[in-house]
Amino acid sequence: MNAKTDPTNPEAAPPEERGSIAPSDTPLPGGGTGSAAREVAQVFGTRIGVYGIGILGQSLLAYLLLPAGRGEYAVCVAFGSLLGVLFPISVANGAQYYTVSGRIGLSRCLCGAVGVCLAGSVVAAIVALPLIHGGVALFRKADPASFQLALWLVPLIAVSSVAELQLAGLRRFAPLAVFLLLQSVTIVSGILVLVWTLDAGVNGALLALIAGYVVKLVCCIRDLRNKCGLRLELPSAMELRYIVGYGLRYHIAQVGNDVEPRVGVFVLGMLAGRADIGLFAAASTIMLRLGYLMSAVAPVLFPRVAKNPAKSMETIGRSLRLVCLTTAGTVAAFLAICEPVVRILLSEAFVPVVPLLWIMAPGIVAYAASNVLMSWFTGSGRPGIGSSALWLSLTVNITASLALYPTLGIRSVAWAITAGLFARGLFLAVMLHRTTGWSWRSLWLPRRNDASFLWSLACAMLTIGTRK
Image (tube, rainbow, N blue to C red; front, top):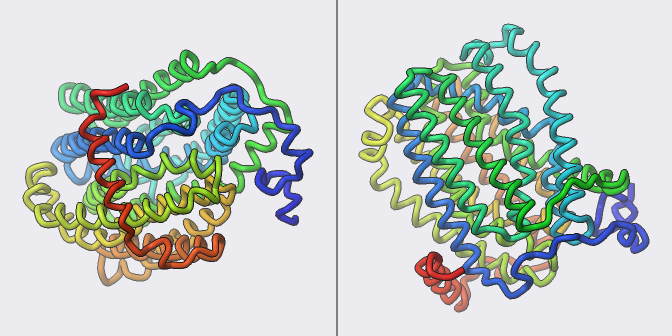
C-alpha cells in the first residue's frame, strides 16, 4: 500500500480522512509555554528516585533469593512482561499518539486501548498455559505455579502502560512522578513483607511486583479522571482502527524493545543454570536502568515532536549531545566504584557480575541515545523505522549470544547486548539523517547553547520542589 494513502498513517492520510476524526477533548496541560528544562528535571528526578528504590529492591532480592532464586524470578518476570507487550499489540502507543496529536479524544483513546489490552490478555493466557506445562527447558527454570502467577502481570502491564503513556503525553509529569515512586515503594515494601518476613520466596517477590502495578494503575486512572476529564466513552470503529493501526506499525518496535533487555535471560534460560541467569539478570537490570535514567529527556520530547516534527530538530540534536555526554560520564563514574558497590548491595555471591558491567557499559551510552532518537521517529508518525532498528538490534543480540556462548559462557550475553545496542543506535542515527536531511555536524557537533540548557536543567532540578 502506498504510504500516502495508508489509512493507518495519520501523517500521510488525506485531509478528508484526518478531518473525520474528532479533535482531542483534553488540551495539553501547560500549552506551549511549559519549560522543557523543568519537565526534564521532573522526569529525571523521578527516575533517580525510582532507580534508587529499585536498587534497594534488587539488593533485597539478591540477599533473600540468592543467585538461583533471583534467576527463577527473572525468568518468570521476563515471561509475564513479554506476554504483556506481545498480545496487546502496542495500542497504548497508538492511543497516546492520537491523544497528543489532537485527532481523537482522551476518553475514547483510553477506553478503546484498554478493551484491546484485556482481550489480548485473555488470548495470552490461553496460549501460555499449555507452554508452561509443555516441558520446554525455559519453563523448567522455575515452578509452574510461579509462571502461572506471572500471568497476572500481562493485563496489569498492558493497561497500566496505556494510562501511564496518556499521562506522559498530556505532560502530567509531576503526578506521574509520584505514581511511579509509589509503585517502587510498594514493590520494595512487598518484598520486605512477603519475602523477608513471611519467607514466600519467588512467589512473594512476584506478588510484590503485581501489587506495585496495581497501585500505579489505580493512581493513574484516578488522576486522568479527576484532572483530565476521563470518562467512559467508547471510540467509533474508525477511531479504533486508527489506534490499532498505529499500534500495529509500532508493535514490532515495542516487542523488540521489551525483548531486547531480556533476551539474555531467555538465552540463558535455555542453555544455563538458574544461578547464571540470576547473575546476568542483576547486572543487566542495573546497567539498563542506568541508561533509562539518563535518557529522561525522551518522554518530554515526544509530545513536542508530535505537535511539530520539523521544529523539533534543534531540540533533538541538543538532547542527543547532552544525553551521550552525561551518560558516558555517569557510567564511567559508576564503573570506578562498581566492585565495592556490588559487594555491599548484592552480596559477595554476585561479585562475578562486575566484568559483565564493564562489558555492557559502552552499549548503555548507545541505549540512552537510541531512546532520544526513538522519540523523534514515534512522535513524527514513523514508528516503522523504530521497529526496524529494534529488530536489527535483537537479531544481532541473539546471534551473538548463541555464537559466543560455547566459548565465553555468561559473558557472551553481555557482549551481545552491547553489540545489539550499538547496531540499533547506528541504524537510527543514519535513518534520522536520511529522513530529515540534517548533516551529521548539525546534530552531533556541540554548540554554545548546549551549556546554557544544561545550566537551566541544573537550576530546574534545584528548584523543582519550590514551584508548582
